[in-house]
Image 1: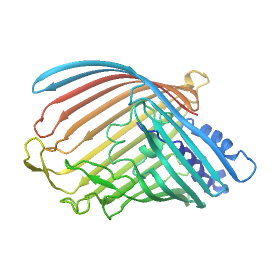
Image 2: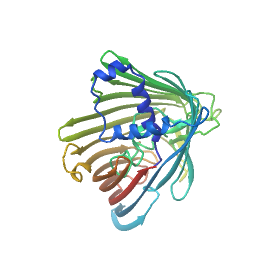
Image 3: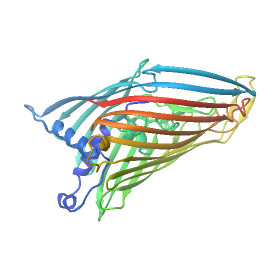
Image 4: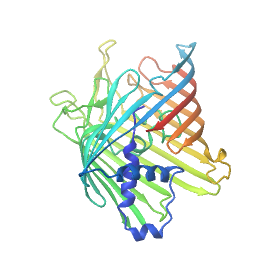
Length: 404
């Protein structure tokens, strides 16, 4: 899990502030169950004045948990069962401080390192320039504007379930070095937003997979990623978005130099109070296509090729009786998610997965939550040499998460 994103809340608050005041007063905005509280508290911190024009703030995210897992692997018709359990495992532990430095009213520097129990990485390192209402210009290392999950929903205190939707947080790789322009504007009674980036892009590996090129590009091409979204209702209860990512992925001068990647995503976010229940529906679908190439099988040096297409997605619903008069009941939330992750058949990493997860949350405060969930993950191999092998994993997860 990566950390994953206090900045999203700041940006939501800033995009709200970019609309005319008289329109906001005339509209009733419906948001997530505790989002208004989050924005209010963060606005208080950001608005705090010190001598001079600079303001420095340290925020952060801490997530840890317990997981008990039972896995049944069937390889060549022979089944084997294994059981594990651990505290603060790598998938459900994260310590991510975030350093925010505002210079004047136009510049904001953000740096977010992250420790997952075994390695130290960086989730975000960028500077933003607030050029005008509805226009933010950013440069550095940031999350790509592809769909909404990675950039807005993946932080432990925002995600309704302890795990990331399988595949969605990994493909395409979520962060890159480059420049970005984003913002939003009114469109009559509706609103729309845009988010466009130009980055180094991805690198095609010898087995057809891709990963980030890093700070040095592997070719002279740059990758364009963009997301456009529409909020068609005046109360902002529904948001619909589409995304695209396009660029070359082959190393310059290699056999794969001309290989290109074309990726598409569609996402939906619907939040509405049907008193006393707050209904929260989210979903995203990704489709990834990389040009067909010929690869070498390291097992026997034979040549092979395949249609390099991957699709992954999820649908999620959560219900919270926020209108209840009982303080304990109103802080309980139930969530359910189903997802899939299908990688290319006849590759060395082909697989078909379906994932089902159900859980309960208890909100101690607006930024502190305890979750308990049960996950079932079924996968069947479509890889060369292991076709038909299956793995079924059942996991019980308990997780605590807090925004500091």
